[in-house]
Length: 407
Image 1: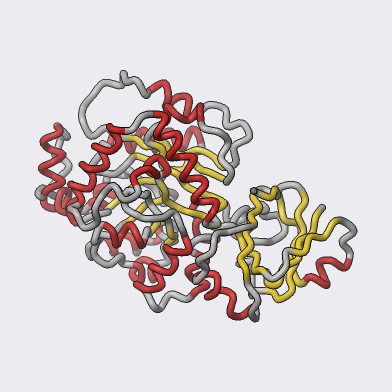
Image 2 (image 1 turned 180 degrees about the vertical axis):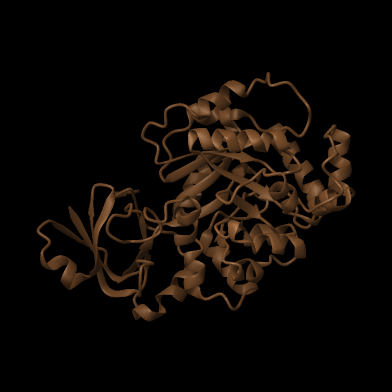
């Protein structure tokens, strides 16, 4: 039983606390509050962290660590289809050793920037048995793509099965990621939902990411439509509805799914999202990736007005220059001035915890919650701390994951 004292304690479960303290036993917090009260009956070790603000560890709700070596390899502002083609060309040039190194470097960058939990999409499952234990809590989502008709006899199928082997000491879990409605068939989504139910797996997918994707489904036209048609993708599902309504109308997703992007929505999409059934849907906005691809303004206000659970993620280094949620918060703050600093912190703590169905386990410093937290240098009054955290530009020097200090 160890107690930790800090200048300010941001629990995300009430107001910030001046002269705060928390107690950890094993992997969980057992007490948190004002230091004089918390420490009054504490008989164990006390660690004074000094002039810092301690807050819950950050949760990155959408990331592709496979692509960490692609930083700076693609110019911003290209069409969505050309960006996809460039990623595919880069992927073909990389070896399994490259992907392994990319994933490990990605974890290091996340850790430096305060992320203690990540939802990571995996397109290279064959490297998974070689991957050392991640230093942070990780949900690995197996990417599913069947854009071209092909038999299920592939060199990576064995790697896919290995992906779901014994989790061992890894913190986090597994999930499935049908890539997007333009690269994953209806049958693929149906199989993912079936596996989700039988194996208790989370599902995340990209949806309505670009105007080209919208044109493909709504109008049966555009650069993405023509590119995929040339690849041999059946296009019979195109030309009648939006990408989101394609997924919802065909029962290819459910309200427990986590949707990345949702940049291109029309009035009928918002009508559907206003229905009570979809109020628990989680959506991940990636502000800097959004800017890189020159998407139209993300409909943050319309989604939050409907009570949807909007989180933040970094996406990959194929469309970003860092894996830094502080930078993502500042970009979101710039684009949406009505967003308060506390709102932004919720989008990287309590809201992604809700997306993971762990709202009583992660995202707060409170008794019974998993002990994931970080410390940020801070010497001011507690009521200024939310904005100071958003503006933090320093690497994180102190981090705890599952009750253990991470070096």
